[in-house]
Length: 279
Image (cartoon, rainbow, N blue to C red; front, side, top):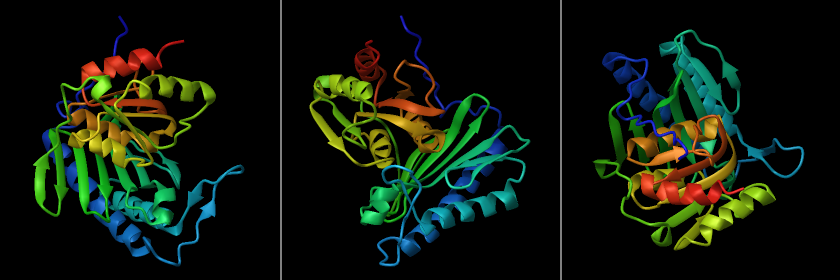
């Protein structure tokens, strides 16, 4: 039987003690607050003029992306200068602590420039073994999903509540999400269709918000391909802390990016993985 990578980040403090864990969580919230201010300042503004990062096609970036990441990096330079940073817009910065902050200042820039509130700010912390804490923040709706270091919670305008993924759902009963209908290559699309054809409902387009909904118990599966580390570290920690399972399409670690399968339960993960992993 294939060995599945199933770390429980909510119970694995990794290389940090309780005092350091508390400081990391406090710092993550400070970063998210700063990113909220920068992104909301420009969201649904007529002055947003995206640049295109792609040589072929359209991969937008805005000044909101850059301002959000700069604000988070400035805070880390002040309070966590020994930690490494990996960010989408400004790349990698080495550190000496063994911890890395993985930042996506706006995950879902296409949604952002379209005025749709399905984008988010992603913040993750990794040690040598992978994610130990993650945060998915949706500034416009005021929702903040976080997981790891003993935490699994949603904070919104109504207060706080525990995040818990949904159990007892088979693939035939499941709601499946992905960002793009084509998923990736023709081979990847075919693998996705093997799962989608057996799921009860398939929906598209929510970027990081789909992973937050898995942690919230509203969605059962997210399957994607072509991801980068900054796309996945925060969501992985949130989903796993809520009781879900996240791996690549072969059952291995997914925090480096590439192909990702997030499932609300181990049983549902096994069903989907068996279809994705078919030659």
